[in-house]
Image (cartoon, helix red, strand yellow):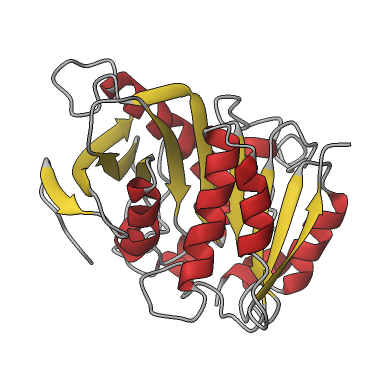
Length: 304
């Protein structure tokens, strides 16, 4: 990863398996904790941590109450992040009717020593999302699992914050690592980076084959706003670009209390409703909910 891009990205609630909790915004949800181990790929050495011959992905899975099949969202945290930092946002998605799977990446999550020194592992993280997706879908075939017959396999989205946004770009828009099971993508204060083993095949190409939501603060202190404007200008439609005026980098999506929390929850739910549930009116809701005087605005590239 180029040093200039590396410098840009530098800057807990633990629940037992089968716990039933009250999701944010109301509604009950089961919270599962699964350990998925990919034995086909390795984890590079980092600091005092030796190289491992596999990749271990501790994954939190939220399952809405009821028995019907639901769309699935796979979520990627950022550097020094963790699924536990997003219980409010992910809980709102669950309350809106989505299964959410959020892995903790092996080297960039907040529980490992100096995760900021391991952000180059982003090249492997799109593969982590695809692996976790496969494992979750396998659980949905297992009669003993709380996920049995609970996922709509034709309605799967991917989203992420910051370095998780780079991971999302990689999982949705690259030749090397794109996963065509994802039919919509949301990048929150993210950056485009080359992923995978081949730098050319690992460059994101925002070709419009799936809908894209970009959300970025115009005064982001970690990843400049220009990264988002450049992405929007280069992206083929359909793409929605929401600017948060005066927001920070991560706090409006993590569990911190900010003036932007309700906007972040609502616009992402609108986007998921439109793209994963097929509610066309939700696109109009998105444009309305993203236009808040003094706090947010939106630009749209609709399908011609």
